[in-house]
Image (cartoon, rainbow over all chains, first blue to last red):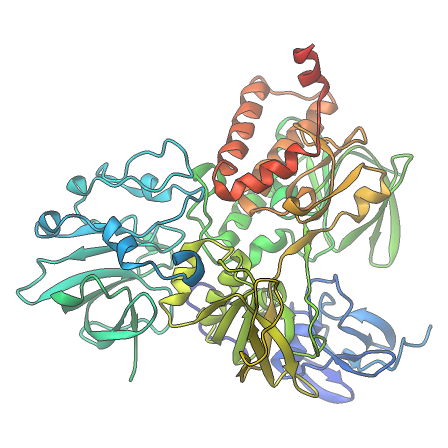
Length: 101
Length: 162
Length: 368
């Protein structure tokens, strides 16, 4: 779901990198956020509500709403909509509130 | 009506069209700006003095159609894409309409596209005569289409394919 | 503690202009932004701006951001810290910053807060399903990262953001099924609405969303007509097959820092939420704290830029800096704001500001 041609914008994408989403290898580009890369890979369900375990996705995409908290390299509660993607990153769906390190 | 639909009424449209006399003299600008908003680039872009200086930036554009030569500089400078140029004298049967078009793919010359009205409904076929996408237009290309004269006032957009 | 003259919180249109103006007057400025790059929401705006030449009318938003960033780059007395969040503004004048998990304390002599606004959400059944986004989120995905949020969208809200994002969705190749607007009239500029209508997209006024349908993500949306009391009318439901629902029902000022700093705040619907009392120079009730842009009342980016210049000028003047023509520049900025707010759309804004304006000492002394 990446836009290749746009009437107004030219997208300059960084180097292609790999990361892991729930142990599955996924491709992304340097310079984008984890959320952007997951979205491009078709992953929309990012977290679950704590009591009713309802799926949650991206809402604000600029770090305001906390709807996208995930576990990144074993650190829970990372706002993946503003966290830059790095090569080899391990991104996981978080269980509950996440364990305190 | 326009406030609830986004589509100008026939009365709105008639109000911004120049006289038939002026239309008969060749290319002329149609400024479809119906709302008082703070904006004046059409005046800034105009070299012929046809679009008058704004007393209040929220005024509607004040156009002297007699001074307009249809140069189209204002067409791609209008942030609301509310301006087009019509040349009713283009040929015996056809009128030429110059429209801003910010979508891909761009049509090509001689391609036959659908002429759409202000509600996006197809009203006639339109033949693409020219496509300008120069740097000066800053990504608001101007597409010139020829339509049968009777549709000159109805067509406001194009659609490809079908 | 890091010595700072003027701290600008937020590097969007307001903050950037504040920094430029304050630095031009000779003060040292630190611009702090929590994002990786400056520019705020400007960098995602692909449409041409309204206003006049002074506010870069007819230039696209992301190009305006570049013009401002180039200016910032050239000014030696502006320091920029990105990826840095201002966590607190304290009574003793200390501001705490966080960067890469480390705390930094600064004690600025003046502060310009230009934190902007956040998107409001809307209550309806299943509004938490993945695929339901704020309109700004869709802009971020499409225009910053070049990613399509989905294939078919329902847009809720026909204000400027709803209309602009709908058009941008179409430019990105996404089909807009419909725009619904609860009011009887379109709130955004009608030229934006007309652009969308002539692409064949319907705008339903006096309509809202009844519910979203889906299990793991949005599969459908049900819209319905509203009566004069804004209640849904049974039997008017329409089901739309969409995989995106975009919410664009307004913004609310991000004013937490102002609350914490002890600024006098007031709820003003005209300005979209709790906003700070301020004088004509954009100084709040706390001396040395200035505001600009959406945090002081949600408006267009053009006025945010002008407010930014004014707040930057006021902050620099507060510290004793001036230019030979400060007075003329100030008059010009006030005049620009005045003309941007002179139309029917600006009436509300003016009404809001009037009810929270602090009489400045200068103004009070002229009256006396």
